[in-house]
Length: 322
Image (cartoon, rainbow, N blue to C red; front, top):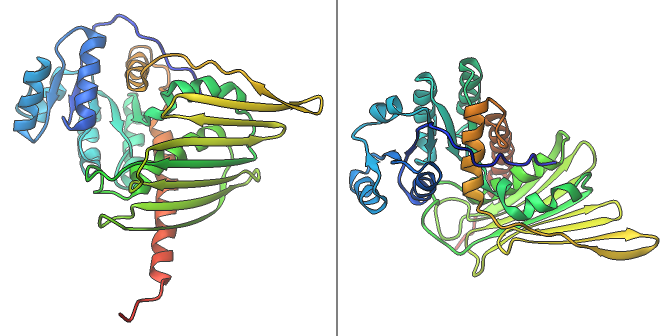
């Protein structure tokens, strides 16, 4: 079951944002509203950073070290290739970290980040924001022992994010969600995929079997004409469908030989705001964040296994003579 996120609290903690791209912009905007104070930001792209600082009336920093020195905690929203360097720098300075997904470019780097946070007794959270989607929070109590799971995550093409495969860009959300519910070791993985509009895999399908016999089929595409974000859970005498985009839950159960609907009320709320509040609460109280560094590492590890299977399948394809 997913733990409930912590609610907003009044505090004096300073949280900075490193990286002012799409997600960094929203982190800075929301943090300003949560804290009611100026949010420190840093980006190597000074023009983009200064534009954001002017738009949101927040404070830009000339270098990373000066921002880290000013903060108690930071949100790392720079490119994945920079996560390792930036996160370690913050942790070494005694600063709590929320790093966007994926946790790092490799599992070795991710493990080092997790180990350092543990050694320093610091919070390391990972930005798998779908864990805070109101729909999955509403459905969580109905999902107890999945036997079969179907996931579909599709989006129109956008050059942003194509520096990594669709597995690390989109599918990793569903990987993390599935791992949070299916508490069992993975025993087998099958996967296939293909680059279509970018140099990396743009569409992928994976089948994961767990030791407890649960089977998960996931499809992710960033070349779709429509946006789809759904997970369907099949359980003994129960079915739960979660639509993350529409924020709706559809559920049915078998009772007395009849199939009947289960009413599920989805609350209002913003996932990114909940994620930031959860992180800041963890920093203040020492309670574990909803998505820990280890959770992020486990999701990355499974994603890389899937990516490896896709690469193997692509290498086995016959080469066209044309």
